[in-house]
Length: 115
Ligand SMILES: [Zn+2]
Image (cartoon, rainbow, N blue to C red; front, side):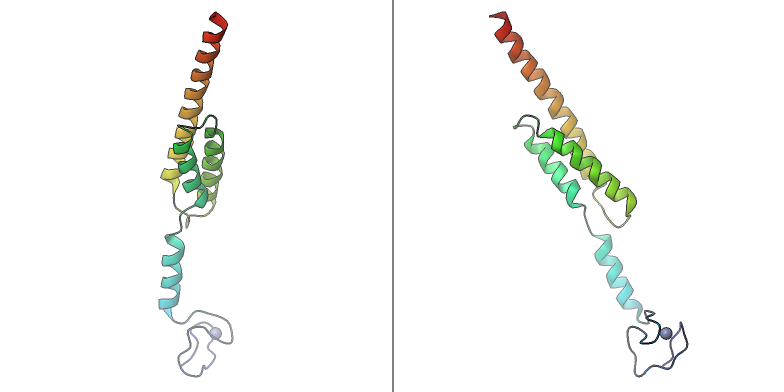
């Protein structure tokens, strides 16, 4: 067979041209696309988990917001990475839990001050 890209004659039916490196077997590129498309941002997962845990642990929501913002930037730069919904959920949970803990501590402080 001959390379579709550079026209060099190749021995047998290789997946990649030995001369120019062009991909000759479309099955290979499809496989690569499938594996990259299903990648989920680790930062988004971390953000969501931290957001849930911060319901019980004060101010862990700060980390949840940081991870959420980092993963949203990561997803914006590379369209192969998924998990935007999780990143937003983690970010929102972080903001809600921080607000909740601030109200809680202000309430406790006002109780102590009124004694
Ligand atoms: Zn070639």
